[in-house]
Image 1: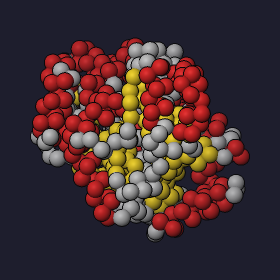
Image 2: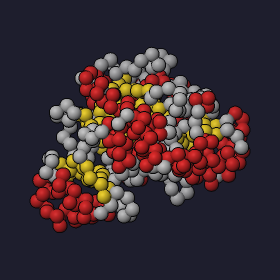
Image 3: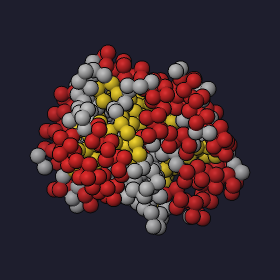
Image 4: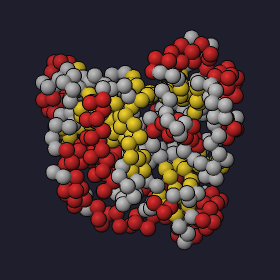
Length: 462
């Protein structure tokens, strides 16, 4: 099936023409480029993130996307010294933080903006002055509702630089994404899977899939960073038999807060040689083809493969070409369905050299955020680098300014181009001893040494 035919069939299946019509007035257009933007990293629609230490501080990753004259919203204060660091050391321009109290939901800042009269008035004033672009982490219903609320108050031009929700959930819902990949590329581009909202059917599916490989897994559909995954050894699954596996499935559903109204995936957990991601930018339809940002090697932890960092890929050229060709076709399909903005795909390179998709991340994330930062600081070309979280119990209680002092002149300065480390997502540092860092080097081996040897030594935790 051609991409056009797949898009047409998918559009009809999801009744997109009707469902997208209400979002049309707020749709981002190429002519909106350069309009003042407000950035919101609202995580409320992603399950289980409330279990991530310091996740409410991740809202400040939006600061790295904002340009001079832009605004961003957060429910937590910026770490002392961080705004000065962004402006004076990284040269990211003057950006204003709009503070909001999320009341009961510390991650739901879009809804909080609508309930905050003063903040809504401020957004309205910005929109009247020359229009406003709302650029979120993820194009959820709450984001579009906020943009609509500003228009209702002002009649001004407001656009959303993200896909409308029906398309957001085609990309980010694992079952919908599987359907899209199969429609565009045909069978064989995904790990074998089954889906059901029945615990009994899922138990039977795990037993069936356990005959195909060494491990199987259950996946919730709308989770990030493997947080809704659980992996099981196939041999153990077979030993349990149906009754035992049914109890395992019920336990998983209970632990993940399943309410019975959503399918769950049972999948063959493929033994991969690599787990790369492809990073894409999807312009508004009619404004150019999807733009490849790069192919990245993901740094994963634990059996479930929880994301902790990334670096530009070192895969063989022919493997990268295959990944880019496959993901480019799916990116083009998403764009024609109405997707706009940042998007990435996770892949597996299998021992037989086949490449399969595992999921789509239709949002800004842990790879695209530092990639965008490095590109802003090095517009002439990316140096070798690695981005990842750094966590150590001995750093608990450390302030951002104390972190800067420990790293000294190894902190990268845009003006002098000296220094090797970029710091971001520093809000969790004081309470949890956790921050994100980019190591810039001359080669992959140099970057690895900076991250594993030099950084712990400078921090005094080696």
